[in-house]
Amino acid sequence: MKLVRNIFLVLIAIVLLSSFTVTAAVRGNKTLTEQDKYFMQLAIKKTKEGVKDGQTPFGACIIKDGKIVVCAHNVVWKTTDITAHAEINAIRQACKKLNTIDLSGCTIYSTTEPCPMCFSACHWAMISKIIFGTSIEDAKKAGFNELTVSNEKMKLLGMSYLDVTGNFLKEENLELFKMWLASLKMMAY
Image (tube, rainbow, N blue to C red; front, side, top):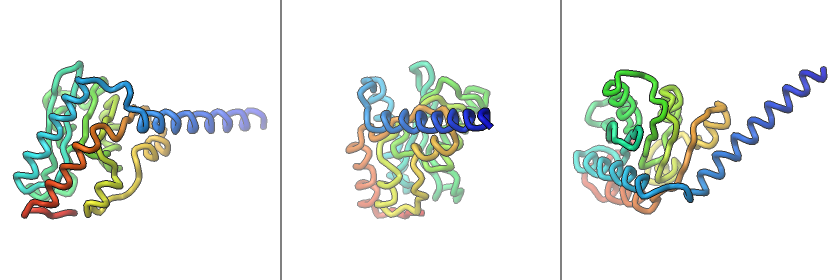
């Protein structure tokens, strides 16, 4: 009985520590660098290309060893593929380019917090770090039919190893929603 109790206590400690790590990262942003800013700005630029092409305001870049692997934007409407989110597109392209499904050591910069599907894909691709701009709540406020399960909650529930940092360049990323809302091609899903 003591063994079961001890295992239970260890599991609770792991869950609590996992939650603390994500919470600190989401509120922190103190360790992010000019290079992180540059890579997020590339994701923002890619998003703007997508919005100008009639797509939704989401973009992502995958970086490995300080080098750009790929940048992609959402193409849900263009492809009529509801899974064609920016992060999924970037992961697919990165796996193909690197000839592997293991993206360990990679960081994904996403203009918006990855949805549960995209977070899961990052986890399964073994991406090491997610840095995002706006939150899932921000996307919902812009009119998207979001499952409001944060990356913090996904990490906690799935006991994922992913390092998550949010609200990075949030104001610049919020501008993407404004740009999209002002466009004549605006369509949410």
